Length: 139
Image (tube, rainbow, N blue to C red; front, side):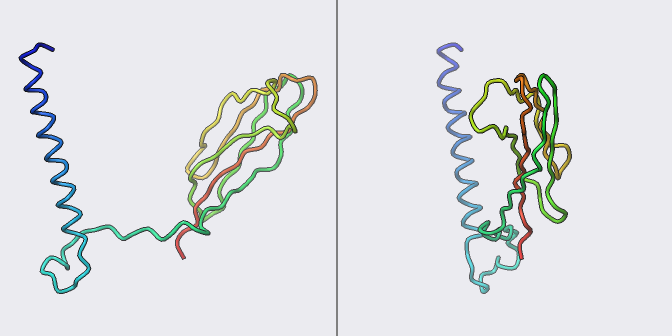
């Protein structure tokens, strides 16, 4: 960037930032009133607020899955019907941290379940499990 382009770039950035702030303030002010006697009250397209999450988050742990020594193994778990999948996790059920268990793949299978694939590099069987975090619909 040359010296002559620097001031122009700064002006462009400042204008874009100012327009963004003005737009944001305008949106907040246009939808922040609760008075039904305002002329724009019937046309405000503000989204309804989401109910509090307290009591709506549910953690589901999958059944422990054994993986034989030197083998690959997979496990998964899904949200019950009617609950929305949010996130998932994979864990070894070993009593101490072990560098001999490798998490090879993980992720969601579909919109309801979580999948974990491990490699057991130990000389003994290990137990692993998958966990999902689900959201109950508002009551």
